[in-house]
Image 1 (cartoon, rainbow, N blue to C red):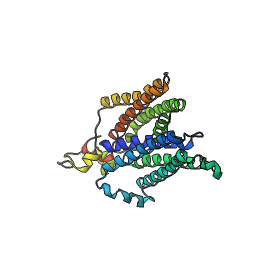
Image 2 (image 1 turned 30 degrees about the horizontal axis):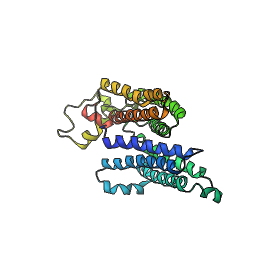
Image 3 (image 1 turned 60 degrees about the vertical axis):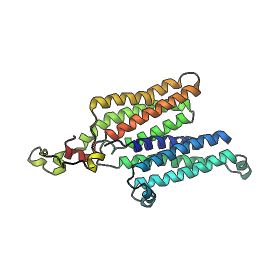
Length: 297
């Protein structure tokens, strides 16, 4: 499928933001005062920036609010609701940590339950985002449990880097890198494993191997623009190596160096750039079954 810059930015930035909110929610010793305000503002800014950028992909962005009505059947609607819930709960927690730390003991209350709910909603949002793609049986590379697993792994890893958890982030980076490698390896086989072909699409497999004599149409269309994209195998291999190096390998090395604040920041920058490349591949390598009609398989 053609990789849209808005969706690449959305899935990368919102994953970072909600991943950070999840870590802040489960932190047994969360920051307070101005430090808490800074962390929560960064997390909310990333989450909202991602959600805002995603609206650019809509033909009628002013109607985006209508997604809230379809929560029974639409993962997009569930994403909208969980995002609103996560931002509300995390916002309440952030305000209490910034201004109300002295009030909670007096009321005999703790922040742990609120934080855990906020963390669950934040990761739930990432899960809903991933399921928008994983539910599509017409894209075999996405239609797999590894799609939400990878989205959650990247959110958790990015959140650990943003929150300064060096030890946790080092382990998460290694595990996420291994999962990404496996997703590429197994994903390359999923279209063939699904059994889709021009013969199954047309029902003509019993009389030979069908092939198109003429293109489906002579002018470009929405299907061609959105659903069909071809990435050269050599080009994809180079981008995969670059993504893995920037997303996991280099950050792990940087996190082991002295001056953790400086090298931790550089590790975060490298990881985010690597995730952007990985997300580009996520969309560009996804083969929609409609490509069969255009000889793109």
